[in-house]
Image (spheres, protein in one colour):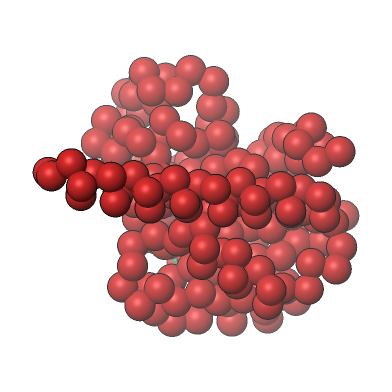
Length: 220
Ligand SMILES: Nc1nc2c(ncn2[C@@H]2O[C@H](COP(=O)(O)OP(=O)(O)O)[C@@H](O)[C@H]2O)c(=O)[nH]1
Ligand SMILES: [Mg+2]
């Protein structure tokens, strides 16, 4: 790749990170903790967000739904009374900081609380772009197979918290817990991994407690 091309790409990353840090700072000042929810299509991102919100009953919660097309998840969340806005990227494989900054003006942000941003379903690009988050939450389903940390390392390396969904399907897909955890630990020594069933909302208590603790230490 030519030097000039590398410079341009680096500038795009630098500009994105600058805006992301501004957003994180502004949201922190409002008392809003921002969670960047990443994971493959169908991993259980929306289902997990819904279960976490039920557990965070005392918090005002906001959601930004990122999808290439459609507002299916936004409609679902609004029906549950959750303040949600939709971003359609029309092809782009990840959300970026300028897009999030612009869309924040469409949220009331009238109370301190938690903002979940569901990134585009993809285990690659979302991990490369900060969007203004305090933490990155990776949703990984057992149905994807236990080799994903080895094949998509960046998402696992950058995750602050991992939810392993579809634990109920483990025996059907020969999921190997030991191999999965070994792959994660080679990349990320400290990230907590919580096994949940996001379809029926089971096993979220520990993840809810972890998020609350992190929020309290990030937002003073
Ligand atoms: N069996 C099972 N199904 C799940 C679980 N979590 C999510 N699902 C199902 O997986 C599908 C995709 O979930 P969704 O939350 O929409 O995934 P997203 O595309 O990552 O937002 C839905 O049909 C969910 O009901 C789980 O833990 N177990
Ligand atoms: Mg979804």
